[in-house]
Image (cartoon, rainbow, N blue to C red):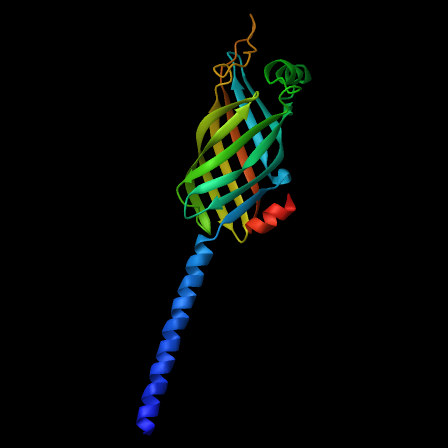
Length: 209
């Protein structure tokens, strides 16, 4: 009789152990697949532009206005926005910057430049570096343009950084080329986004906005 009770007790512990392992596995899978929200910190984010001409290269920066992203790892969906102040461009020349803001970007009419992503190609690792491609709509001068950009992402202890490089063919997209008789500039501009911030639960990101 004692042997029978012992056998039942052992089987019960084994069953509980298997059930506990199964629950732990479900928890780990759920944690891995959990949606991720990324808040952009303006103090740690820079938007640089490079415009070449026949004499020298013009470089400058724009200021981030706001930004937050949310990723659904299972589906690859990504939502949110990265918004830049169109009138904040600085290249070291006040006259050139005013011309860019007033005549090229027309920032009085179109005060924001924004990227609204909708899907991500590749997986963002919970720790370490990942190389992905992000698809979405890039809005500049009041018009949306479909775009897919490569991104290098690094995650560590709730903090993240990302670097993105892409080209904006502004002349092809209907904006004025600032070339003159004595100055010939490229009809496209190179953009380098270096972003950083905190990775938080989506509910926290929503309440923080």
